[in-house]
Image 1 (tube, rainbow, N blue to C red):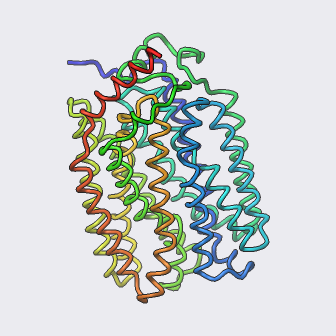
Image 2: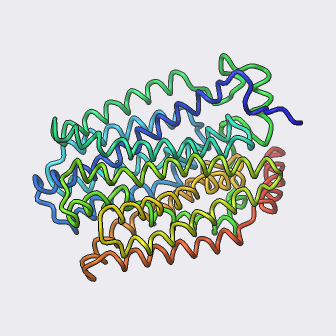
Length: 431
């Protein structure tokens, strides 16, 4: 019987993951705060719903446009300096959100906030590639995304209380200060190469180096290694994931308040339920990816959980569209969120498989397509709701896109692509 190698060792790699988990938590609290503050901000700044859709969309647009440059920079600079820099930058823009006085200024600030945040997950994924072997990456990437869902689930009611107690402006300022504190700690504590980090045992270093892990240091770029049919499928399916999910970060809470006549705290409590389901999905999805991987089925370990998740999401969306009570609606949308979030670990694991030492760049491209999906969601939801008078049209479109993602995953290959990547890596080493 093989030893459970992923359990033992000095455990420094899990402290790295804990730091990234905390970052993911902070990142999403910063991001969803505006959803909880939407009603107060719209009233004070006199912003109608369609214009506020542009505020939500500005973040997604900035996030999408700067995603690939950010991932490329992470691959070139390394994760220590770059992650500390961008966290400090977006924390400054979080502070500035609390100082905005006009809708135009707010749109601009949220655009640059999104631009600064664009490198967060690609850089974190690059750090995980450097610090954890393939057998642990599914769970690690799942836990990274669990931090984001818990950040949103806890953050919505938490910031709602802060807004009610101190006002929306002070809430943004407090969140900005928390991000600056994390950036300072990361730059002081983290090291690119596990071998240079105090406390890493020889046993743990050997385990980290197994399964194609490598230090998160600068590499030469070769775009040919990232261009393929399989990479295109990976990017497109992430558009579907975010088109469905972004409702949680934008219109879900305001929609619950308007449709069901709920106060802010009650609506926040309901809006957090899908996010808790998403946190459960990212964790269990990561476990399922690693469990199948350890049985020697690399492609199936990515493909099967993703196809399952998108299928569940599509069916639950159609049920949610016809729900009449807040309990039924939130229940079905929680199942939707569980489905799309179950696809996150296989998506990011496949990105590391296909990207290798250029994981930052490829995961950035994938996240960019997801951000385009989020931008489309932020604009499509209020437009379709205004045009039709109900949410059925949006939910049918989202379900159709999710079913298309099932087909993409059925045709996406990891094994063949990985062999090509190894040849490309060999050529880069020879240069």
